[in-house]
Length: 362
Image (tube, rainbow, N blue to C red; front, side):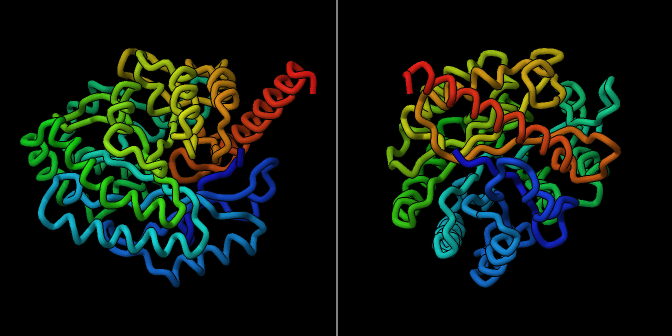
């Protein structure tokens, strides 16, 4: 297992590589090129410079999140082939700098959504939260305005400015696409891309829908265990994998996360894990929370033990953190609470490893 932290380059992050290097247990970062428009090829020279910057700080870079998928691919439009070709060229460039895992998503229009990016908890910390009825009262423009107004001046992945103007039209377009057709569009992408992923030795790791339920009539498919089985049946290439995000999947009350972790990790389908906790307030309402099990509704120990018992040897990162101690940062991506989360996860993994060795008499 390698413990990493997400980091945004180009002065688009309040957290520095030097600070990340000082977090115990962290070996590297998952990063991106946020200024490259969706659908364009990621320039090799920029990727080389990015890697050199990270290596100079004493960290590794083996994970990219995300090379976002153009909406034309998701819609199944004739123009998708050019965008898929660009995606493959980007993958070739990623392989040249040693990337081993590529986190991406196939969520229509909205990569993720929260009704509030800065809700205060009783302890005085601030978190991202979701209230379903509030979301349903918003139109796309109001949603974008609400999200960006609390971004702290930082970019929000999935809410890039060039995408905002088309959001309302995109939502309307998807009303004509059935779930079955969406699976077909996804399979088309996988069938073309996965042979290249295998060639370049890159594990593709799809991120679950966030939140994992229908919203505005959009097709939501990466939401539960049965749908994940369907997803893996689309293409059995060994490079076809999952980013096991506990916060996304855990928002669905019916998802048994330890069982899901055990099932898919044992199949070698989980190269990347996002670990965070949430506190559910209603079936479709939740606040993000501190990572330790006691502060949320997800048993992080049981989830990590299921991963460990299933032979997981990929990448783990603490996912979104709270804003604590007066920190000002991109929502969910401050230094302090993610550092606390990282050390908590590192301690869990060490304890599980030692307990297993003791049971085996090693």
